[in-house]
Image (cartoon, rainbow, N blue to C red; front, side, top):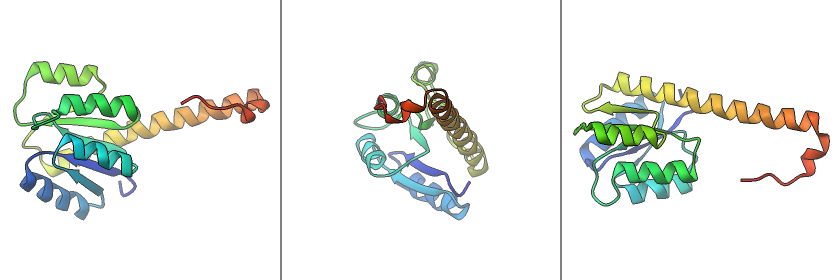
Length: 150
């Protein structure tokens, strides 16, 4: 777990700090953001594997932040977190590519389990992409010199 880089996004400062400290004690490198705009800035500045994202926030809400994350960083796994469950936001989040949707309060061990599962999914996808690239090069050696599409 020590190689996972987590971004925790929530507008409740006390929750952010307490959860960050608990995760850091368990070896998870944890970045925090108190709103969607700051979360997107952290993603620009740091390699992040998993985001735990509050649904209800002032400004950009969690669903809109999720949409922007998946557009720009499709391999980052996002766990939606809320204290105000609504079927609509859960369905919308999952349709947009959220890994899972969980309710507050969430025990730190349950959060770690979700983070580990999401990280494993991200790594599996990265491995699949790497294998496809290697297979392409092996079958077409000149492909090394071709420009990759983003």
